[in-house]
Length: 564
Image 1 (cartoon, one colour):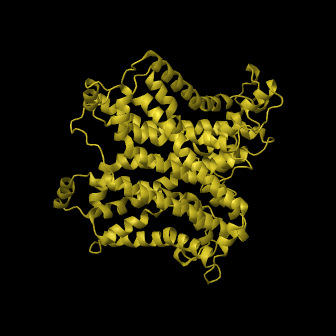
Image 2 (image 1 turned 45 degrees about the vertical axis):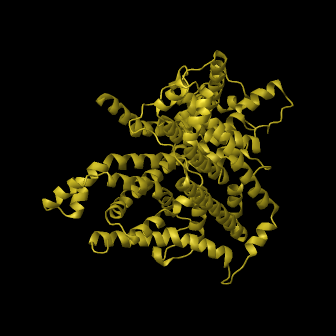
Image 3 (image 1 turned 90 degrees about the vertical axis):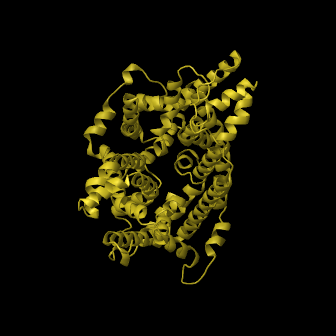
């Protein structure tokens, strides 16, 4: 790498960015927590141990994570089996219903559940007409957070566990059936053991999701159930308690690192089932009893209704007067397009959506273009230096977004030499930098894989014809990996649109992103107009994210079917 001018430029750029935005913020966070006045101090630990709210939030986070590890697996495995294993009626419709989590999640989902089932939600108001003594806070606290996050975090099961199920050799299943094994025995003795490594991986990811949950506990947890992430946000708002917030964020980061290390260790030492190199694709299995078919179909469609109902409500309520939603009674006279007209014609209403689109678009383009030469260098020049750089660039992968955001806030609240002596905290730049940081590991891994798939013969031919390194990359390599670059940029874009975790720490008051606007609309009863606008935001987000997913995956699948 050091022998090439291009390699030196890449090295200098990576070292500067890593030092300024990956290493220094975390070091500042550690120093502010444990060396506040230039001397080692454990006062943050003492204040944490003396805070009943903080200790309760730690316990609540562990409880939530452990509960989700069970509930999400139960629901996720059931979804995978009814969409990939059993012979179900209208199986594609079932899959589409369960796949709504791809386009409906985060702060948008939490706000949607609040508007439907919360204190002033449509269902709560409708029930209150028949049951005046109904506790309006029935859908809040631990049970509500678990319910929402259980149905919102099965995406990993649909992505990874479904792929693992599809990789099982159908011949092994048929052989077991010929030997007299029942469907239950095949599931217990063949299918589940083959899925165990992937099941363990998604369990760890689910546990981490519960441990660092912010939006669902913040919106639906109420006063009685707050987890670590909302408590970090509360403590970080005051300079006197920011060290406790930093300590909580560090503990959250340490838990993430330990669990990811455990997952890697188990994966390296695990026993994996071998499948045939020319495996017969798995086919849907029939039910052995009629009652079994009835029970599974009823459960599957009931679960489908749970997934689809909030999405249908979001679409329908975007065309309904907000006062009718609050009353719990909707008639044809309540239908209106005022919310859509207001959002699409008012600069104030459309502003948060535009701000999020600009932030997401710029960050997605910056991280893909910025890592283009980095991924190329790491793929081409292998050695201890490139390995070290790669490990450093993966720091955001093992740290919660809250920890990254808090580190940036505490680091750049004063002039720093590495950024030209500028103060970045409170500016519009810092949130964009945070978005770039959190997307580095995902983007780097996929770009490296794309570069590794480029045939060496193409570059050799360009070199023989006299093309330099940059010309070869621009004229030969980039056109080959352009589809991957576009797909990565699109996925980054959709995942950042409704971000709340980083935005709540770093957004500029004059440029409020969508996640902040949606969260504010869930606070109190008086904000009636914001409810309708939030439903319009929700529909717009679902349309944009659905379109992006179709462009990335749908067109590729259609092209493959046409070639076949």
